[in-house]
Image (cartoon, rainbow over the protein chains, first blue to last red):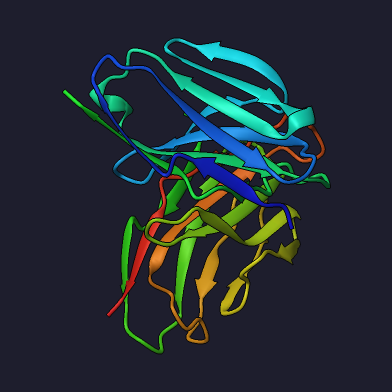
Length: 111
Length: 114
Protein backbone atom coordinates (compact mmCIF):
# COMPACT_ATOMS: atom_id res chain seq x y z
CA UNK A 1 0.00 0.00 0.00
CA UNK A 2 0.88 3.64 -0.17
CA UNK A 3 3.44 5.03 2.27
CA UNK A 4 2.98 8.48 3.83
CA UNK A 5 5.96 10.06 5.58
CA UNK A 6 5.85 13.30 7.53
CA UNK A 7 8.76 15.42 8.65
CA UNK A 8 9.97 16.59 11.02
CA UNK A 9 8.49 14.29 13.68
CA UNK A 10 8.82 17.00 16.33
CA UNK A 11 9.08 20.76 16.09
CA UNK A 12 9.54 23.29 18.88
CA UNK A 13 9.05 26.99 18.16
CA UNK A 14 8.88 30.31 19.92
CA UNK A 15 5.68 32.25 19.45
CA UNK A 16 5.87 34.35 16.29
CA UNK A 17 8.15 31.99 14.37
CA UNK A 18 7.34 30.46 10.98
CA UNK A 19 7.48 26.76 10.14
CA UNK A 20 7.14 24.32 7.27
CA UNK A 21 5.83 20.77 7.65
CA UNK A 22 6.36 18.23 4.89
CA UNK A 23 4.38 15.20 3.71
CA UNK A 24 5.82 12.74 1.16
CA UNK A 25 3.71 10.00 -0.40
CA UNK A 26 4.79 7.02 -2.44
CA UNK A 27 2.08 6.84 -5.12
CA UNK A 28 -0.47 8.94 -7.00
CA UNK A 29 -3.36 10.13 -4.85
CA UNK A 30 -6.95 11.20 -5.42
CA UNK A 31 -7.00 13.60 -2.55
CA UNK A 32 -4.87 14.86 0.30
CA UNK A 33 -5.98 16.42 3.57
CA UNK A 34 -4.13 18.21 6.37
CA UNK A 35 -5.53 17.95 9.90
CA UNK A 36 -4.68 19.48 13.26
CA UNK A 37 -5.31 17.25 16.26
CA UNK A 38 -5.92 19.36 19.36
CA UNK A 39 -5.01 18.26 22.92
CA UNK A 40 -8.49 16.73 23.36
CA UNK A 41 -8.03 14.49 20.33
CA UNK A 42 -10.35 16.30 17.94
CA UNK A 43 -9.21 16.23 14.31
CA UNK A 44 -9.77 19.62 12.74
CA UNK A 45 -9.79 19.92 8.96
CA UNK A 46 -7.20 22.41 7.75
CA UNK A 47 -6.98 21.85 4.02
CA UNK A 48 -8.32 19.59 1.32
CA UNK A 49 -5.57 19.95 -1.28
CA UNK A 50 -4.93 17.21 -3.87
CA UNK A 51 -2.94 19.75 -5.91
CA UNK A 52 -2.10 23.43 -6.03
CA UNK A 53 -1.91 26.01 -3.27
CA UNK A 54 -4.47 27.21 -0.73
CA UNK A 55 -4.34 29.77 2.05
CA UNK A 56 -6.41 30.24 5.17
CA UNK A 57 -5.25 33.04 7.42
CA UNK A 58 -1.80 32.27 8.81
CA UNK A 59 -1.83 28.80 7.30
CA UNK A 60 -1.18 27.81 3.72
CA UNK A 61 -0.56 24.54 1.93
CA UNK A 62 0.94 23.45 -1.36
CA UNK A 63 0.71 20.04 -2.99
CA UNK A 64 2.93 19.10 -5.94
CA UNK A 65 1.19 15.91 -7.05
CA UNK A 66 3.68 15.09 -9.82
CA UNK A 67 6.51 15.06 -7.27
CA UNK A 68 4.41 13.40 -4.56
CA UNK A 69 4.74 15.84 -1.72
CA UNK A 70 2.76 18.45 0.17
CA UNK A 71 3.88 21.29 2.43
CA UNK A 72 2.01 23.01 5.24
CA UNK A 73 3.21 26.50 6.16
CA UNK A 74 2.43 28.10 9.51
CA UNK A 75 3.34 31.76 9.84
CA UNK A 76 3.54 33.85 13.01
CA UNK A 77 2.87 30.80 15.15
CA UNK A 78 0.75 31.04 18.29
CA UNK A 79 0.57 28.80 21.35
CA UNK A 80 -2.83 27.61 20.16
CA UNK A 81 -1.14 26.11 17.09
CA UNK A 82 0.39 23.44 19.33
CA UNK A 83 -0.73 19.89 18.72
CA UNK A 84 -0.21 17.18 16.15
CA UNK A 85 -0.46 17.82 12.43
CA UNK A 86 -1.43 14.94 10.18
CA UNK A 87 -1.29 14.51 6.45
CA UNK A 88 -3.66 11.88 4.99
CA UNK A 89 -4.17 10.65 1.44
CA UNK A 90 -6.75 8.71 -0.54
CA UNK A 91 -5.55 6.51 -3.37
CA UNK A 92 -8.62 5.37 -5.24
CA UNK A 93 -12.15 4.09 -5.43
CA UNK A 94 -15.18 6.17 -4.54
CA UNK A 95 -14.72 6.34 -0.77
CA UNK A 96 -12.71 9.52 -0.53
CA UNK A 97 -12.71 9.36 3.25
CA UNK A 98 -10.75 6.11 3.12
CA UNK A 99 -7.50 7.69 4.17
CA UNK A 100 -3.94 6.57 4.84
CA UNK A 101 -2.34 8.74 7.51
CA UNK A 102 1.22 9.76 8.14
CA UNK A 103 2.70 9.47 11.64
CA UNK A 104 2.22 13.16 12.31
CA UNK A 105 4.36 16.14 13.30
CA UNK A 106 4.15 17.20 16.94
CA UNK A 107 4.31 20.99 17.12
CA UNK A 108 4.98 22.80 20.38
CA UNK A 109 4.83 26.59 20.42
CA UNK A 110 6.24 28.30 23.51
CA UNK A 111 5.16 31.80 24.59
CA UNK B 1 -25.52 22.18 13.71
CA UNK B 2 -24.39 19.51 11.28
CA UNK B 3 -21.72 17.17 12.48
CA UNK B 4 -20.61 13.78 13.76
CA UNK B 5 -21.39 12.72 17.32
CA UNK B 6 -19.52 9.94 19.04
CA UNK B 7 -20.49 8.52 22.41
CA UNK B 8 -19.38 7.95 25.01
CA UNK B 9 -16.24 10.09 25.27
CA UNK B 10 -14.60 7.68 27.70
CA UNK B 11 -15.30 3.97 28.05
CA UNK B 12 -13.88 1.38 30.39
CA UNK B 13 -14.18 -2.31 29.65
CA UNK B 14 -13.26 -5.42 31.52
CA UNK B 15 -11.25 -8.02 29.69
CA UNK B 16 -13.46 -10.52 27.90
CA UNK B 17 -16.38 -8.12 27.42
CA UNK B 18 -17.77 -6.80 24.17
CA UNK B 19 -18.42 -3.07 23.99
CA UNK B 20 -20.19 -0.91 21.37
CA UNK B 21 -19.14 2.60 20.38
CA UNK B 22 -21.74 4.90 18.88
CA UNK B 23 -21.33 7.18 15.84
CA UNK B 24 -24.13 9.33 14.45
CA UNK B 25 -23.94 11.93 11.67
CA UNK B 26 -26.43 14.47 10.34
CA UNK B 27 -24.37 15.62 7.36
CA UNK B 28 -26.35 13.41 4.96
CA UNK B 29 -23.12 11.65 3.99
CA UNK B 30 -23.36 8.22 2.43
CA UNK B 31 -19.95 6.96 3.59
CA UNK B 32 -18.85 6.40 7.18
CA UNK B 33 -15.55 5.14 8.60
CA UNK B 34 -13.97 3.91 11.81
CA UNK B 35 -10.32 4.61 12.61
CA UNK B 36 -8.12 3.58 15.52
CA UNK B 37 -5.31 5.71 16.95
CA UNK B 38 -2.62 4.39 19.29
CA UNK B 39 -0.38 6.76 21.31
CA UNK B 40 2.15 8.57 19.12
CA UNK B 41 0.73 7.03 15.96
CA UNK B 42 -1.35 8.03 12.98
CA UNK B 43 -4.85 6.71 12.39
CA UNK B 44 -5.54 3.28 10.91
CA UNK B 45 -8.75 2.24 9.16
CA UNK B 46 -10.87 -0.46 10.84
CA UNK B 47 -14.07 -0.61 8.75
CA UNK B 48 -15.94 1.58 6.29
CA UNK B 49 -19.36 1.68 4.70
CA UNK B 50 -20.47 3.44 1.53
CA UNK B 51 -24.15 2.55 1.71
CA UNK B 52 -26.72 1.22 4.14
CA UNK B 53 -26.48 -2.54 4.80
CA UNK B 54 -23.02 -2.79 3.26
CA UNK B 55 -19.54 -2.41 4.74
CA UNK B 56 -15.94 -3.43 4.03
CA UNK B 57 -12.95 -4.31 6.16
CA UNK B 58 -10.14 -1.85 6.48
CA UNK B 59 -6.54 -2.54 7.40
CA UNK B 60 -7.10 -3.73 10.98
CA UNK B 61 -10.61 -5.28 11.11
CA UNK B 62 -9.77 -8.35 13.23
CA UNK B 63 -11.60 -8.32 16.55
CA UNK B 64 -14.10 -5.65 15.46
CA UNK B 65 -17.60 -5.74 13.96
CA UNK B 66 -19.91 -3.06 12.54
CA UNK B 67 -23.45 -2.61 11.25
CA UNK B 68 -25.06 -0.01 9.01
CA UNK B 69 -28.81 -0.24 9.38
CA UNK B 70 -29.41 3.50 8.97
CA UNK B 71 -27.62 6.10 6.89
CA UNK B 72 -27.00 8.24 9.98
CA UNK B 73 -25.53 5.55 12.21
CA UNK B 74 -22.44 3.32 12.09
CA UNK B 75 -21.81 1.62 15.47
CA UNK B 76 -18.55 -0.23 16.13
CA UNK B 77 -18.36 -3.27 18.43
CA UNK B 78 -15.03 -4.12 19.98
CA UNK B 79 -15.21 -7.83 20.70
CA UNK B 80 -13.32 -9.94 23.20
CA UNK B 81 -11.29 -11.27 20.25
CA UNK B 82 -9.53 -7.90 19.90
CA UNK B 83 -6.23 -8.56 21.69
CA UNK B 84 -5.26 -4.97 22.41
CA UNK B 85 -8.39 -2.82 22.41
CA UNK B 86 -7.13 0.11 24.50
CA UNK B 87 -6.97 3.00 22.02
CA UNK B 88 -8.62 6.19 20.79
CA UNK B 89 -11.39 5.51 18.26
CA UNK B 90 -12.49 8.08 15.69
CA UNK B 91 -15.48 7.97 13.39
CA UNK B 92 -15.61 9.90 10.12
CA UNK B 93 -17.96 10.50 7.22
CA UNK B 94 -17.75 11.77 3.65
CA UNK B 95 -19.62 12.07 0.39
CA UNK B 96 -19.32 9.07 -1.94
CA UNK B 97 -18.13 9.37 -5.49
CA UNK B 98 -16.94 12.95 -5.55
CA UNK B 99 -13.23 13.73 -5.75
CA UNK B 100 -14.06 17.08 -4.20
CA UNK B 101 -15.18 15.43 -1.00
CA UNK B 102 -13.29 15.58 2.26
CA UNK B 103 -13.63 13.48 5.39
CA UNK B 104 -14.92 14.97 8.64
CA UNK B 105 -14.29 13.44 12.04
CA UNK B 106 -16.13 13.11 15.33
CA UNK B 107 -14.54 13.92 18.69
CA UNK B 108 -13.53 10.34 19.42
CA UNK B 109 -14.05 7.71 22.10
CA UNK B 110 -11.18 6.76 24.40
CA UNK B 111 -11.48 3.06 25.29
CA UNK B 112 -9.54 1.58 28.18
CA UNK B 113 -9.49 -2.09 29.14
CA UNK B 114 -9.22 -2.59 32.89
